[in-house]
Length: 475
Image (cartoon, rainbow, N blue to C red; front, side):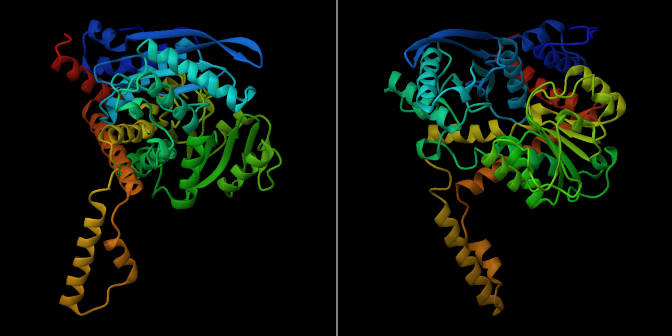
């Protein structure tokens, strides 16, 4: 296994591997086996031309497969100017561990295209996305059976619909073509609840953490999640849904919001919906009336709060600012927001960190539901919903007949209403995040060498992956 690093700056892949090494040491796994698990199976780099406004431009993209111990390999595709091979490979590794933690039967993969989507029209983006998809399909890196992308930074339902259609035209005989990507529009094989899945999963993680009194006390808190002050970085898809649910349903105070152009601070709490509306109208958080604007957004990382939720980019909490973090709980909604060096500092300081490989697994969990739905060719709840409603109505009638007492309207509504697809998706996501935390906590409590939830999460993941390798006779 790798030695502890001595230099100040690690690559993203090295940071992930060093964090995994802690778990390999705890589990006493042979170094050769550990290296085999950590190794990236394959990385494809493509360079392809697209004619834009009469001029040919060449675009570079990657698709990395970290592990195929389970198939298909799963992971998003991001369109951004920061994409490179190291980032894609590190994110693919995180996907392997992430899927194992939440018991989603996928291997890990990730993709990226080096592009600034804001510089291109919708038609141009469609041409570029479809061409990228064709490159991936022809080289065996896109298929409902072997490699299934999803949205990530800079991509969404629109891009997934284009990719699915490109695959369909190349493989019209594949009846499961819609399962080649997840995160599609509902009208094109998507599933309700996928857009909010990662953010809602973050909330389910926090709720489960606060159900365990020993975890709450160890983090230096008292009571439940309600009333806790929270600072968010990023109001994209993940940050918006997580922050708005925490504010509206859990009674948290969102006291700070860090964005690319600065930060907003209000000790009495921000209205996340109003901030989002302001951004959509003005393109910036500047000028929002009910908060103090701070130009140096990253300085807000070190402001006093109960919970810090980085929900934007990797490497945001580093050795330079980790000593000054005042939050007692960090919830990693983004991938890799805390570097290995910063994580070491936070562990020494006793700051509780809920790791990215678990916290933001809500997206891949609901992607799994969508993929299963696509292969089954039927929406969840279609066969049983009305039957459940009928049973509920009969139960109500029986209770009223036996007691001769009226039943409150709200109870009647709850008993008679059958679960629709969104109800089932949220129920499955909540159950998944709860059970995963309980497994992580069990590992945390069972090993004397484990003193943090990140190592516990990797222990859970690597133990499952190792058993999978043993079962199929890899070693």
